[in-house]
Figure 1: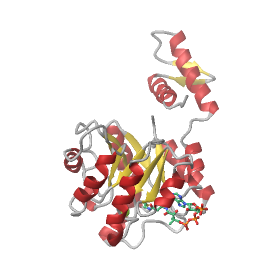
Figure 2: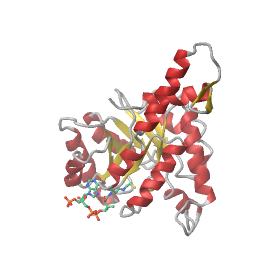
Figure 3: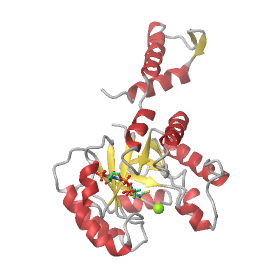
Figure 4: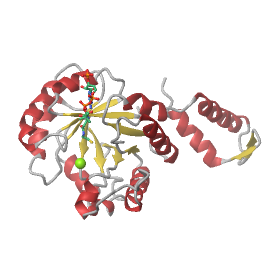
Length: 277
Ligand code: COA
Ligand code: MG
């Protein structure tokens, strides 16, 4: 099932993890990385392990610390017995880092890579395909990369991303689809600005992202709505599929005054595959 909204919950906040179960997110990301201070990591590992041991009511991903941090093995040792649904890999740097994490996992655990957090990561965005069936998606971030390169800002005055981060976002989108996995939009940090979030998420869906990460409960319904096909979109997709079914062998057809051909049929089938029962 496609994940529309993935809510981050700091791993050292067990109260919030419990609360997060009832908020309507499609998945949670229990964080051991940036939202947890170094001294709090051991307690956070224990809290996440205890949370994973409860009966599972929704997909639970865990964001571990990066490969090479010296912390990831302790993270995995603590959480793998609880069989998380997935691991979020921060500071991923392409296929080799995906293979390195894959080798540490057993069982049915997916991987969501955050694929734009270091300068080298940008050059690995086309290398995620064909490595492991565990790969569920690629996502991106515009917080760590500017810090890594000494940029003073990732955003223009109007809030839109500057050119380097638009490039990172676009390459993530194409890298995910080249690997045959979902592209997931990054967080919208200003959690009080729900109109801005709605517009941002709508652009993500328009461009080919299938879901988005959230940081605050109020963001979840907005994100779910943005990544759910509307009744009108579903009706049009069904009409396109029906038109080709009624005209077997046809290449191009007309529907309501516009031309439809193979890409339209493909897009319609993709959209219908995402419709939730
Ligand atoms: N998960 C579950 N519950 C959350 C939550 C989250 N991520 N963020 C907020 N809440 C809950 C609060 O517990 C509070 O519940 P209550 O009304 O029952 O007390 C309610 O939502 C309102 O919270 P609010 O006061 O608006 O937020 P805050 O100022 O306490 O916290 C953040 C703001 C950003 C620190 C918090 O939303 C958060 O921790 N987000 C995730 C951060 C993260 O993991 N970042 C790493 C990836 S970028
Ligand atoms: Mg980070």
